[in-house]
Image (cartoon, rainbow, N blue to C red; front, side, top):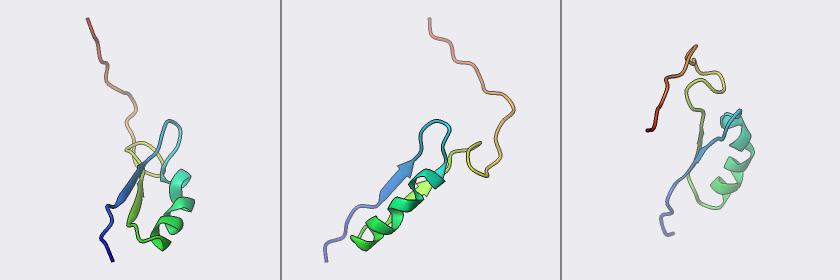
Length: 57
């Protein structure tokens, strides 16, 4: 069997890994290693109380 590239899911705003969990078994059944992660401050991970600022001139 040909080795397939893994699939890495990153959620969008106001979501976490849970929004892609239902897709993982589908890709696993089709020979892919699939991963869904939660970014810091989403899901059950600790977040920051404030965010930094970015300025563009």
